[in-house]
Image (cartoon, rainbow, N blue to C red; front, side, top):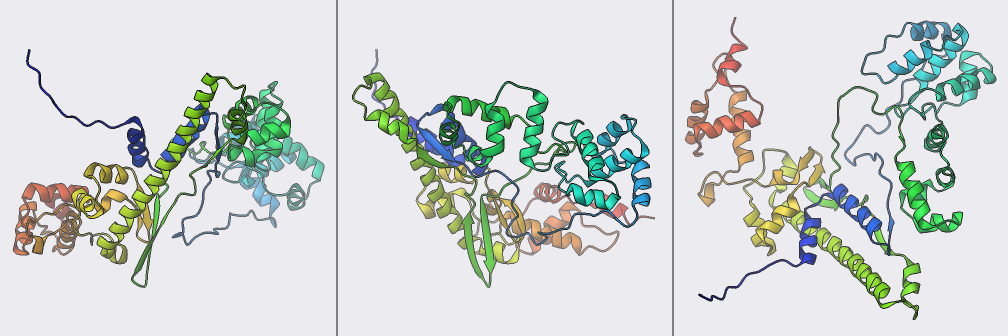
Length: 445
């Protein structure tokens, strides 16, 4: 039997968790922290609500909603009765339900006006007295048609606001849960911040009952009309950073608004001081306190690491932020790791899945990483610069005389950039530019 001595290095569970958090983007980290509260009883979170917030780079912040013409109610009625909404319009199904009620022309006119007045979420925000005045009908008739609208599917349609919407859905379910309506009516803000202990104390019930009721509320649809506008799935990106470039000055802000604030439930601190607490329970609480403390430290490390890396990127890729895409300079994981005294894998994890927004748009953080195409340091060219040159060469083509990939390769070589034809084809495809034959076909008779 041969004995040999070897040395190996392994990551501790705490270090593995730290690296895992570093790899998560903002919304993934929010989900991780929220899950922590469910499994760790000593953790309390203050969670900001997830809602649409305008980008600091958005200019159209007050687009007015289309209004109906109150001066021609009869014309408006005729328009609604003959309405053939597109299949992508979520109101189309509501029109069909209204037609199945066999209402009088008078009530049908009011109901269809209500449907058309719904906002994008399915809420009826226009005051009922204003509707009555616009249509020249009584308030009682409007109330009757609003009640008909609120009986339609999906549940919650026609509500005045979010609270009203959730209450309508709870009434439709006819559940024996008495806590959920109280939470919706008085504690929605605390529920959004996951302040379950405070809600339980106010209602005089247990924290477990409050958490169960909140899960019930979260299963409801806060926007009844959302999701009824076709099968198109839109994927939204919440930037992890905002980069501002004005007067040749570049600055960055980390978008950590959505991250919950981790606090410790004081009730468990008092329990720890109880001398009658068993050793097993004390050890259990100690472990949970330690986990909460570790997660807090890991989140702080993640923020500081990302801040350092982004600040370095702002310096190296300043031309991109000042002049736009195509001005990235060569930069790799190794370059950043050496500059910041980090491991390459740490840099890769930190950049993974992260996005930033600047005046040029929203980009993956890794779009600022660009490999060097030429080995000469004095004549290094990044991938982004190569693609920009390819785009410029193709834009300068004469009609019907498009450059082939080989010709593009030769033109770049004449400019001191050695690049293979197949690489040209790859970059051209990434840019969404068709082949030379297809570009020439546009000018053929």
